[in-house]
Image 1 (cartoon, one colour):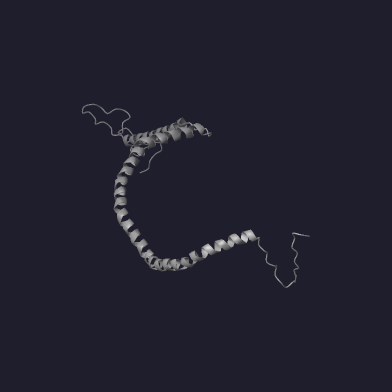
Image 2 (cartoon, rainbow, N blue to C red; image 1 turned 30 degrees about the horizontal axis):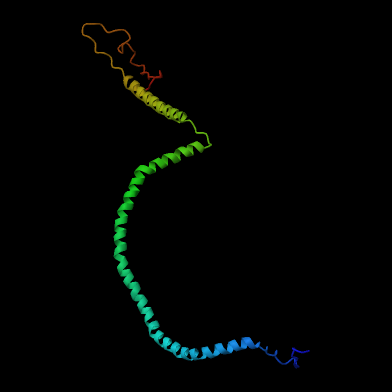
Length: 194
């Protein structure tokens, strides 16, 4: 069997896998690349060390630099923000007044009419309530009038006879004809005992 190489390999449970033999073309390319990279790698190590040494002081100052930058930004932005707020506050207040005086009543009436249109409960007639109020007022006025009439009648119950005209005989049925032993009668017709 020409062209095939045969090798004898010892296999043991305790040994590792045998290394793979590379093809001669790939190995040659890798060897040439390694020869070109080796001088560059030798120069890269000192360059990396120098960059690290320069970065250490910059890293130490980074926190202070950031704090100083934020302080500067705040100092610059604060007057601008205050000016914007002082301009915006009256504008917003004026808008609120304009909305409450013009748009809000229209929105309110639209919402009320929409609520009345979609309401399913029947509305009670207001005439009944008005009639009840008027009837109560009429009853109160009638009772006041009755009280006043009764008071006036009690005040007029005391009768004072007209003074006799001189020269005329007294009329029949006057208090002079009534027996003096009989007690006076009240309005209700009962005799009053004094």
